[in-house]
Amino acid sequence: RVAKEVNFTHEDAHCVMSGIILNKIPVRVGLRRHGAVARDALKSEFKQLEDKNVMTQLGSKTLTKEQLEQTLECINVIKEKRSGKIEGRTCADGRKQRGMYKKAETSSPTVSSGALMTYI
Image (cartoon, rainbow, N blue to C red; front, side):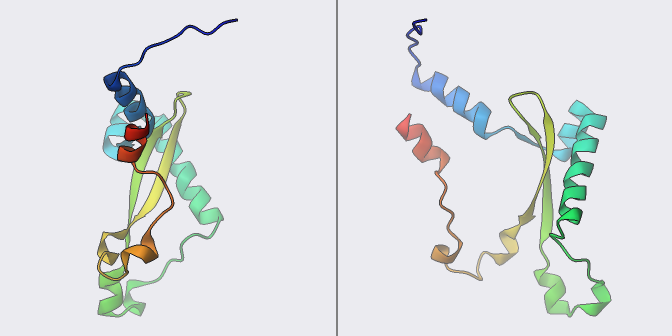
């Protein structure tokens, strides 16, 4: 079969890439939109974090005031896969650490959305 030639405009490409990149929604919205499926996806994510010993629980009374102030919070989101599957995602909210490290120490080898859109 010969593929049809498709002429995408920049706006079309932006719309497609936005749908792929920006497919995470806040938990509150995800629970309202997907109900028990979203709740089960978050439970599965939390169970996986627990099974892999990602975090260790510490009592707040065992930490100093400075350590408590440096404690990172988690950000939880619901991810809607293109296949329609709903998944939970958890990551650390690193905003408290912004001034602690040099940019070179924290850079990640991933492409930025702007660079990707420029390439397309």
